[in-house]
Image 1: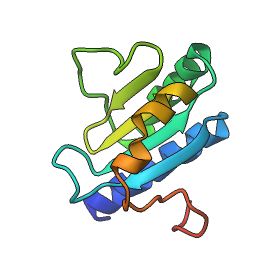
Image 2: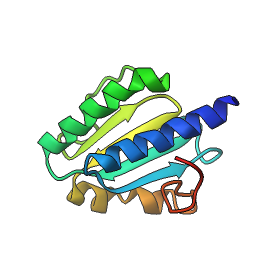
Image 3: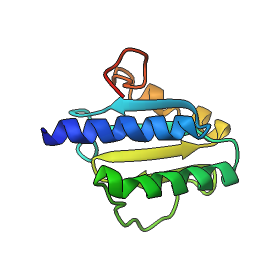
Image 4: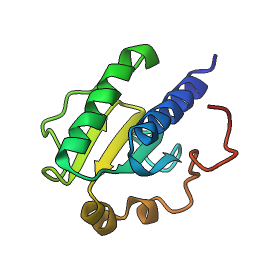
Length: 124
């Protein structure tokens, strides 16, 4: 299987995993060719820091099966408990509270990037 297809499938599986564990407004944006550091962003809204920590745990548990690993970062989260970023190299997971998601508006920043979570976008 092509490396990019494997990464795309992993991003979709992470999006589904997060949605299955009550992440809200989950998007998997295909940002290939739009930046130099990642191919996919998985973005979800969390209801609390406890919810975020639970989703982080589920993501970390799925990494081995998906053939991914967390890249070491200097900061644990991007904006305190409002925005947690999990850097997986080609995939970056963003778990954000409603105020952080509204303020940073990543969907607008990456306008035009296809959302692979939309109905009918490939097989899950």
